[in-house]
Structure formats: structure tokens, C-alpha cells
Image (cartoon, rainbow over all chains, first blue to last red):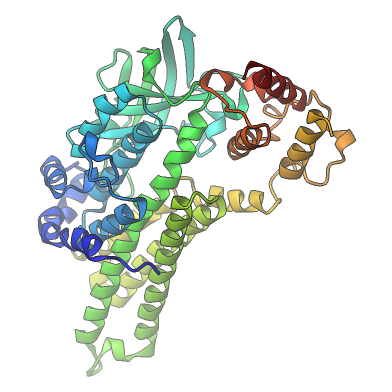
Amino acid sequence: MIRWNTDQTDLREGLERWGEALSADHIELEEQGRFPEDKWKLLRDTGILSLPFEEEYGGLGQSLLTTMYALEGLGEYNRDSGLSFSATTSICSTGIPVQHFGTDDQKQRYLPLIASGEAIGAHAITEAEGGSDAMAMTTRATRDGETFVLSGSKAFVSNGPIADVIVVYARTHPRGGPLGTTAFLVDRDTPGLTTGGCGKKMGLRTSPLCELYLDDVRVPRSAVLGRVGGGLMVLDHVMKREVLFSFVVNAGEMRHRLERCVAYAKTRQSFGRAIGSYQSIANKIVDMKIQLESARKWLYDTGEKLEAGEDVTVDLAIAKLVTSRSNLATSLAAVQIFGGHGYMSEYGLEQDVRNAVGGTVYSGTNEIQYNRIASMLGLGAGR
Amino acid sequence: MSNVDTIKNFVISEFLPGTAPAELAVDHDLLNDGVIDSLGVLKLIAWVEDRFELAVGDADLDPENFRSVEAIDHFVTHARAAA
């Protein structure tokens, strides 16, 4: 396991003092399904949104692993999981690809805004019919001189209702297969771009989500992010960071949950003894510890390999599977340990269960992760 | 070994294990038939750049350059000539 230096631990522990303010009223806000704009301002003040971005664009210039470590702290101290999810979505959807693939103009225009949180980013990949199959997308981008015209619709766009800039993935070549998709930076106020269908979610309700409609949205050639036909390369780069950044937040949430359960098990009495003295409860908590440390190990090991430039296709899929399943399992265990209290909304534990289910679905469903691992083992369809 | 054979061997070893070289036509559509998916294309481009010591530029990312073994061979030949 990585030995964190003083600067890294200071960065992470510095988040603790923001925890109470970030977490305030999170249960009520979640019930209302409202994005907390005032807390986004607090989040901006923490500096966490600027962690991985170059200093010349207003970032803190932190490495992938240091960013992960700080984001784990966000999960540990902030109980508003939807807010954390919106933060990692903004960082990963827009800032990360602009930093890696963007032109100088794109970096100067967008990175300072994303790094400071003044602008919120989103990306539009999934479509109603295609699900996690990015190759099946039907949204088209047709070249017209020095512009592209985007037409189609996208579903489940996290941060969509609040985003100032959206990275839209569209087909630029109908028979181009994996080279037929291009990423575009589309400003929120671009004519023809509208949102709708902001339905109620099972969890993460303070992070708004919507459908996106593109009705002949005309963007200049300079809005292409990366290369024409290179959209899936952009997406591949993004998804690696999205999985590591958003799921390491879950690891922080699991750590908080574990500590909360340990404290409860030591004080809650049943039949004259602390419930933690019963093996049936203690073993649940031990399982939570094992699940937390397994998830952390997979996430940080994968981060180290990614930083070293190694192929992380399988590692990333396993890290996502292990963390999302551990998050769900530990959230259910916490409800069980807290008994009737855990079942009540005011304890925030049933909310954790609903939030954790989301992790098995977003960033590529867990079924897709299984398919990916199977494919790398030579077991994919058509083999 | 010709470039066509080199490319064919790579495609078979990475994406169609167990396939005899004679079974893979040089004009077989690798992209539309799903032989090479979004992960595979990253691997293919990285391999082409490394094996043939050339850079795949923005304009070269045209699917037609990577659609088949034959197309990749043509692309490599032209890219090397232009270098």
C-alpha cells in the first residue's frame, strides 16, 4: 500500500474541517432532490475541484494518486454523496479530457472555469436505446464546411441540468466503427441544445441528471475535442479517471460507514452487552473492513499502474466491480447493524443503500465490466 | 514477411485467436463486423505506430485507413512514403 507523505495527508485532512458544512441537511436535500448551489460554492472553496489540473490553468497540479487520496477524504467527510458525485463528474467529464486532448485555446477557455468550479461540466454519452454500448450511439455530427451539425438525443446526463459546458459524443462516420465517434465541447447556451426529462432518481438525488436534446446544434470545427474519429479514445481516457475518482469517493464513504458501525456496536446494548461483542455483529463489521480494504487496494493499485502507463483494462473493471459491490454490501450491513434505526431515513443509512446501487450502474454497468474482463480472457462474443 | 502478413498476424493474435491466416480475407471489414472494438482500435493504432515507426496524425484517423488488413497496409505504405 502507498505510503502517503505529509503534504498528501495534510491535503486530505484539510478537508475534514469542511465536512460538517458540506454534509449539513443532506438528508432533507436528498429528499427534495435539489442540487445545493450554496454547497457547490463551499466545495469550490475547498480547492478539491482544482486538484488534477495544471497550475497555469488554475489547478493544484496534483498527481492522479494524490487526487484520488484527497477525493477519498471527500467521501469520508462529506455525507452528501450526490454533491461528491457532481464534483467528480465535473472534473472527469470535461476538465480531464480538455487537459489531455484540448488545444491551447480550449485549455485557456475551459480549464480555469472547471478547476475553480465557476463552470460545471458534464458529458453526454449514453442514449436511450444504447445504454452502455457507446458504439451503438445514433447522435450524429455532420460536417458542414468549417462547422459540425449535431443531431440526436442523450439520456442520463449527470450534471446535465446545471452544466455550463457538455462534452457530447456523436457519430461522425456512420460506418466508422470505433473510429466513427468524435467528442465535441458544446456550451450550454448553444442554439438547439435543450434539456428535459429530469426524472426522480433512486439515489444521489442532489446530483441532477437529465436528457439532452440536440436539434441541429451547430458548433465550429474548433469545438472538436481531440481528433475527428477519436472520440472513443477521449472516452477511454475519461472513463479510466472517472472510475478511479468517483469510486475512491465511495471508499471514503465506506471508511466513514465502518467507523460509524464500530462506534455504534461498542455502545449499543442488547441483552446487557454491547452488540459488537456478539460474533454475528462483529463478523459483519469485519467483512466491512475487508471489503473496504479490498476496494482501496484495487483502486490504488490500478491508479499506480495507470500512472506508470500500464494497461489497466482488466484492473479497472475489477476495481469498479469490487468497489461498487463492496459499497452496496457495506451499506446493507450498516442498516442491519443499526437495526430499526438503520431502516429510518433520518439515520442516512437507507440513503447510502440507494446511493450505492447507483455505483453498480454508472460508469459502465457491472455487467459491462464482466463482459470486458471476459473479452480480455478471450471469451468475448464472436470468438 | 510482407507487411500484409505482419498486420494479419497481429489482427489474428489480438482479435481473432485460433483463426487460420487463410481464413481472414485482406479486405474483411474489421470495424463494421465488430472484430475490432473501441478498446481494440486503441491497441491497433498504438501497434501500427510502434511497429512501423510512424505517427498516426489527426487526418489519418479516418476509419477507412483501419477498416481492413489491406487498408492498414495501404495506409502504412503511404504514411512511410510521405515521412
